[in-house]
Image (cartoon, rainbow, N blue to C red; front, side):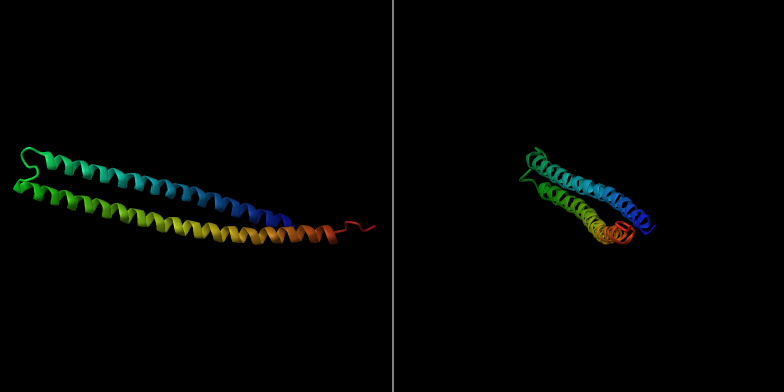
Length: 131
């Protein structure tokens, strides 16, 4: 009876690990998306600066050029700050999920050892070899 209870406990841990791994995969996908978004934001910013530099009416050398560049820079920094905040939240969530996964794995290992010991005890003392 104890062995079946341990099996149920191990199955519960397997189910929990599966759910956490699914969540962790989602977070890792979001982190990858954030990195891609960061590259896109940088590329768009560089393109805006280049377009502003060569603009025939407001390009480099005009009074408006520095105002336009400053506005682009402020917008860019704001976007990056938002993105960094999201990445920080994702990293925190990833760390929390990894910690939970490690705890469950540790519990699972303990129960697996207990199961092995119970099987060994049942085999040794449960009537095997008695005649």
